[in-house]
Amino acid sequence: MSYLEQMFGLQNRRIVITGAGGLLGTVFSQALGKAGAELVLIDRDKRSLELCGAKLKGIGVSPELIVCDLTNYESVYTIINEISQRGLIDGLVNSAAIDPKAESKVLDAGNSGWFTDYPLKSWCSSLDTNLTGVFNISQAVCGVMERQESGRGVIVNLCSTYGLVGPDQSIYKDEEGVQLFYKPVDYSVTKAGLLGFTRALAAMYKGTEIRVNALTPGGAFNDHTPAFVEKYADRTILGRMADPAEYGGAIVFLCSSASSYMTGSNLIIDGGWTAI
Ligand SMILES: NC(=O)c1ccc[n+]([C@@H]2O[C@H](COP(=O)([O-])OP(=O)(O)OC[C@H]3O[C@@H](n4cnc5c(N)ncnc54)[C@H](O)[C@@H]3O)[C@@H](O)[C@H]2O)c1
Image (cartoon, rainbow, N blue to C red; front, side, top):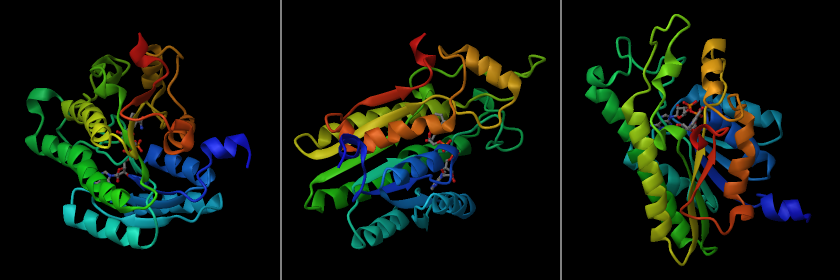
């Protein structure tokens, strides 16, 4: 086995990825699959999950696909129990989230994201998925990892630069200066909360080989308007948005032996947005 395979190879590792149908969720699945991991992909959206599965088949990876809403505690426990009966669980990537984006119209009509008009329902649904959903599946998976003979496991929580610094709302203005959207507060709150969850859970597993880390990406290009890309790029040191594929190496690093001395930590990959 080559040095690179020893460090970064994921042969014989079975990894569960939530939100696998998402933009980055699909990239994480592709990268981990290419590194040799056996994959179990979860999403509440069947169509996006199947699209991700089809992309993986195209590169010779055959994942198990499971439709599940992570906010449903009983469903999560049932599927994790079933998954664990078919083999070990070596890793969990918590990528599923409600991430309102200006271009994807996740917010209901009439909800601009502005704080004083922001519906309690939207706040609650974000906390429910981004925090409670992560709690549900992490608790179920940790229970399995604790019982496994290997005593080993990795958990990666997807955070965001907006969990480290407040959103720059000016990048959501159009060319005429009209504000199109506001990144809602719950996104920052839940992503900051996940960093606390990462540290607390890592500390809870002191003296074991169960490691818990966070990955903090900056904005990935997804057919944004040239005006948006220009404003976004101007906030970074590298002067551009990320290509989604640029996060593949980081997830392989965090799930593999290459990060074996890392826990309770946060890997920031944001083109320098939070450094200036
Ligand atoms: N895309 C970016 O530029 C970016 C930047 C910083 C951080 N992030 C974070 O990285 C992660 C992945 O981002 P992405 O671009 O793939 O997001 P995305 O919005 O494209 O995908 C999120 C996926 O999660 C699924 N999901 C939502 N709620 C769910 C639930 N209750 N149960 C099961 N599945 C559920 C959705 O169906 C969707 O497929 C997210 O946590 C996001 O907040 C993304």
